[in-house]
Image (tube, rainbow, N blue to C red):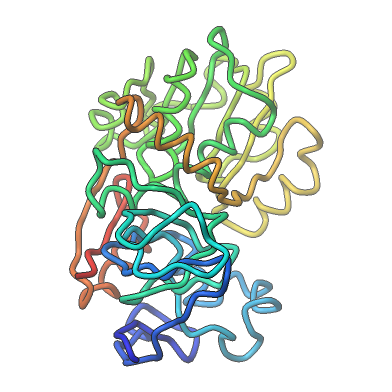
Amino acid sequence: MVMKAFIYEKYGPPETLRMAEVDKPAPNDQEVLVKVRAVSINAADWHVLRGKPLFSRATLGLLRPKHQLLGVDVAGQVEAVGSGVTRFTAGDEVYANLLDHGYGGFAEYVSVPVDVMALKPPNLSFEEAAAVPMAAVTALQGLGHHGAIQPTQKVLINGASGGVGSFAVQLAKSSGAEVTAVTSTRNLELVASLGADHVLDYTTTDVVGDGRRYDRILDTVGNQSVPDLRRALAAGGKAAVTGFTSVRRLLGVSLRGGKDIAMVQAHVTAKDLELLSELIEAGKVRPQIDRRYQFADLPAAIAYLEQGRAKAKVVVEVK
């Protein structure tokens, strides 16, 4: 049996991807076969597609990619289950993240380990559900890296209109914190609609030098230096960085951040997805979608996200 999928055989721009017929996967005993109905695009996809930063090729493949299939966020229907699977049955609507399991989401079918998937929230479409796993879990683990957010705390979210940031604002608010969100002029209204108590325009405000102090900072962009982050922290404050704009910034946090300023890379678990499902069903968190694409236009979706101008999430329908 074959299926349609986007594959890439060399590093390069989104046009490097091409539609091809490949073998339909077969789930092992702890996996389910999912008929993919929607995927979302993440920064990880275009970084891996281009093989950047270059040091990442040590694991991705030095001269050419080891794996030809990208895509980490999927939502769809269970087609078949492995012999050891008891929590899911054929027909279940699910969502999952494949970042730690070889990717493979840019296809009509994918085998998914049960420990990185959960039942799709019934109040979300497949496209909305696909927008959740990577970005929302990154926000969840970034905010929770130094312990649970407390209702009395003041929290700063840098990059509040992006995929991770838009979830982080909602998650911090659901914890009862006082949330200050940073974005650009054109996204002020969107970020305010997510529930932020204060919205700062980074084009007109010195976000880390205006004298305000925060108990927690989540930097989803990675454009602040360690000294700048420290300057904006209150006594005992902690920061987490989940993105980076340059290798220099990444190394700065890794080498100089200490215990108080940490680089956080999310690892999605079924437990996290189940918690998010509860918050979504309760109406406390809702994915924000900027653009929707059809499967044939998936390379264009990646190109759009790579421009760095997307508001929240970009999703692709896979029929």
